[in-house]
Length: 455
Ligand code: TYD
Ligand code: MG
Image (cartoon, rainbow, N blue to C red; front, side, top):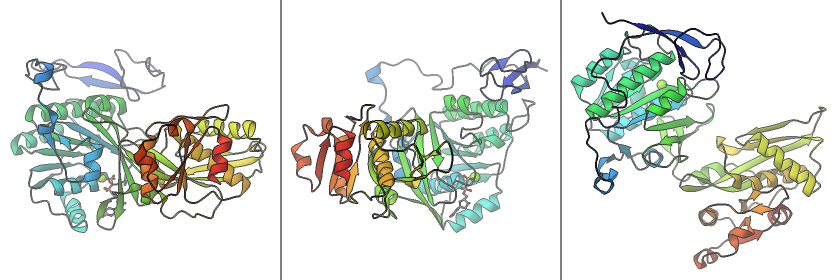
């Protein structure tokens, strides 16, 4: 029998050590090294041979265009996030909290890809449970094969025998191999099993979906190592108690990242939300102080989003600053600019900021909408309901240029907004076609000017 070696693998960062240490030398976490028995690699298993085995180098212009290798799923929101459909022999990791809808999305996918042969490896639910769900969702997938299996070797054997076009492993955390003595769900198991499944996908030319759970900290369990191995990482987000779901691509070898797809969880499964702006600003109250509308860019799309701020007298010596969906440090800077440049007293106030619809805003162009919402909440005066805005705020209270102003203007006009406030730098040389749109485009140089424009 081949000789086993014992190594110690950090369950946080995946660093490998030859001897036990209380503290990981790589990520400095305590008590995270796990003893792992590893069989030597088979002789024919070469590191780095995963991507495209057996291919000779080709000249750049001779490389095949990827379009021929694409497979549209028919779920528009998913296709866009994937960068234009599924790529042949690619491995996709779908992460999200339990109950968010990962398995549901996979069933929709299976139904849409019918009649292609799909193998659903389920370590979490029995075939009966999956069938009941499919019935509830009224999906028909005649060529979907279910295998309630968690043993890696058995899974690889089924794949070899059935020759499916697409394999779904739900979830990768349940898969384990007898080659490694650590228990299912540990980093070694997840990494090694995923690696062998991905290798099989490349060699046998099937598309592989790996479903992964998210840890309490919001990262994929067994995180970075898995993200490096797959071609695409999709993150499923959304508050469990609300109906909308957002799929975000955080890594994509075959498309752009930060693209989002929006869905709504209904009685019979996930429904695409093809006009997310209407969704993110639906249900807003126009006559309430503290609300503003941001014309945001998410991936290749402009989306209008409602920003809400609640400003109230504090009962604490340190006022509270809480933000959902927006960086807290950036919010503190905006409050400091309001205080220093516009003499707005925010110090004695608790400030709560929330991005409606559970969206997470990372682009600097969101600054003005946050400042406008807080200022409106502080003054207790609603903003102009038909005005949208986008601008980055500098520390001197100046508005700085932003990207993609054209798409933002078009989306606001499309949804019937009467005006949009942008940095002056963006409005100096507007295309004639934009000037013809039924929307007033206000270019402002300072935050003060912008707030006056917004009402
Ligand atoms: P599921 O896909 O099982 O989540 P995950 O695989 O990410 O753990 O989704 C489960 C939740 O979705 C569950 O709370 C019920 C809800 N749901 C609906 O509201 N409608 C439906 O049609 C389905 C199938 C699920
Ligand atoms: Mg599930």
